[in-house]
Image 1 (cartoon, rainbow, N blue to C red):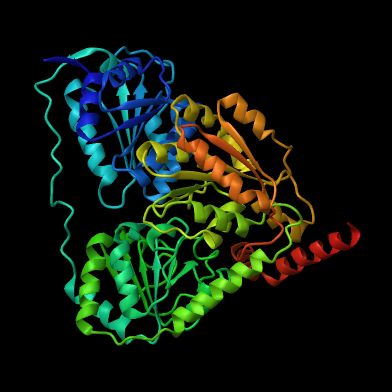
Image 2: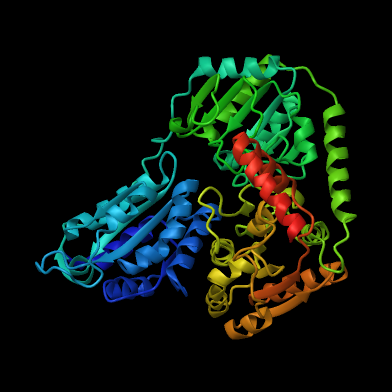
Length: 578
């Protein structure tokens, strides 16, 4: 039979369960967009910028049941999308990137969009394919999907050249996708599992550290923590791997950069079980986390073992398989109850930390703790909270409990600003019946705020809470002590109401603590009617997060004595002289 490569691509995507594609059409993929438009299953979404498309696709993969998929033009479309592809690549998020490509058989050089896309994307993708015949289209898409979702997930790139995608070609058939059921089942190391269980049960105070790789093993992690009487902290990306309203949950990380509940609960930790985490810079407080000698490390990617902290025992595999098996081994050892002293201490520390925030004088602006409390009270347990990169990210990590797995997403190790607005749209498309809210800084809003137009054009009801303080505050705070000046971190005020009007969004203003409950309720009401809402939250950032304070100290401690004297001396001199 004769089919265009675009028709074959559409068939393959439908077989793979893709529900949305994100991108902008161009001359190289017009046929693909025409095929997507004819699909009863797939909705092609036009975005304002391909960077936003990649963040939307990322959010679909993180929160939905299908793989996030891009349909973009070659060259410029690929470079525009690279930030979102890199985010997915470094965070281990599956994604399909379908780009057009130059005519592969006309023999001409310097064609439109003629670059080596594969070399460009190699560092941030798991694999890339260039299709050279119609017969390769469907098998390539299936293989790309298996690679993207297998092992440690990640993005995979497919180039569909102009002459393959747009023209007819001969194929023998259109085979259905075979999921290869059972292929991911690994043989577990029973001896290592028994050893891990014995180490945890024998420890005076075991602790659990959960990353994104543990997010789908939440129920088993809860039971394991309760059996061991172990406090549980998470990474930033894995914030939803353990319910934030559980009495053993303490927050993000542990050590001097973590909230008091985490620092105190892990103070005597002599055996740490780390699940689905790479011990990267952010969740370890710039590598200041005091990891005990007895470290049991579980991860699907064995390359992460011993990278930053030496492990005494490693188990390579999927947490959804290993944690239930480990739980069974711990149960068999019948650990003794540890009493409620730890739980009571965690509760006291959490209450004390929250009180310190609520008592902080925000001088007429919105106190972050007051906002987080008001938002949490009005959200359902299964709500999805999307954050951007900035000071607000760590405020949410410290003050906003997340109750359900995959209920919090944000840019993590790649840490790209501009994530929130498009990712909130992607998460809502993947979860139309759930509450999805975004929290974004006024700096990050400048990057992808025009995607609000994408939301309004699709009648996507999402409230976007903009923390407005007129600065790139996370960096501005880091500049204050050593430099006593803020270079390129003070922002010209943005008229968010005007942006809302320009993009078809509703607008709500929250100027102080007294406005919070009513303002949040109004934003949720408008969003429930299918309208995006930009909420200008006049936030107060004068109180530092524990994370910010701890990381500054940890970084300074690593300086050589000479550099430390230089930084401190300069800071003091500028304080005196102004």
